[in-house]
Length: 358
Image 1 (cartoon, one colour):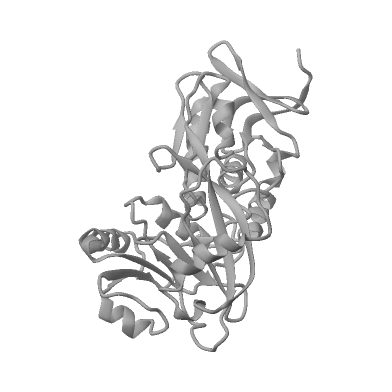
Image 2: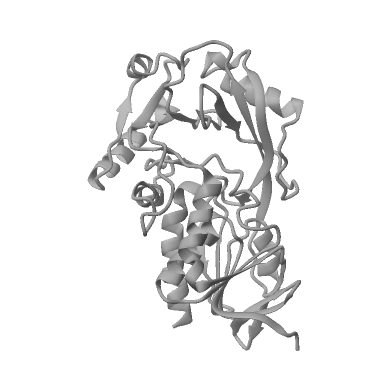
């Protein structure tokens, strides 16, 4: 029998924002947690996130709103970084305006501030943006972005009293005893646990398969560019998410630089983060975002990265407590949108884990 290197109530595979948010909530419930990650805390997709947070979810879910509430109060203990409240503007096609208005009504009922802006409203409010007449916007003043690595570090600190972290240790299989999970096999040895949460993005697929659970996920390519406009002005723009082009922009950490990204169709890429962007990707991102912010037509690229996110077959993330083996849970497939949802996902996942343990 493989020697146990750690033991806890719960083994969480994946030290990204979802795994850490769940671990913090599990510790708050007086459960012990072993965190396992082959590359380190927030060293993968979460650490590369743009950190966008808002309440409005074009898909109609409520987790973004709940997540924003927790981010605005700086986490459950008030010790996370503050939200950079630059505002959030989500652009949708005019044909979807009615559904967007219904989403805004739900936000109002939940106590969030949001408004629908017509094309003329958008031009008046944000003259620095170049927007066609067939778009409407959902604007939230109390939204914006957060430094992703600082947030995950704060989550880990909040969970420190009840966690053991195994960094640079790769999970290789879920271990069972009878019809229940019994832990995780790793490159350092066995971790024994009464429940196992897989929150390792596409890396969860192979682990779930070791106990006969199908979890189809793919790594999708992601590239972000930091553009430094050559002129002045435009520095007061909010975070912009354009659902019609799959692009987003937000102010960089300081000055007038802009961080921008565009969704990619390239899948099955390596789970790696590189501190650079290819010339081809730079051109692809610029070609899309320059139509929304004209300053980016000739802006200098002063930074960027090439990363990945986990794409689910139905393009919808989920937290699932599997009936067999009992005690196995998965929290995956957020398609690059997991950061804004993470506090709500973590709270929900911790509730399901508690129930699975009994």
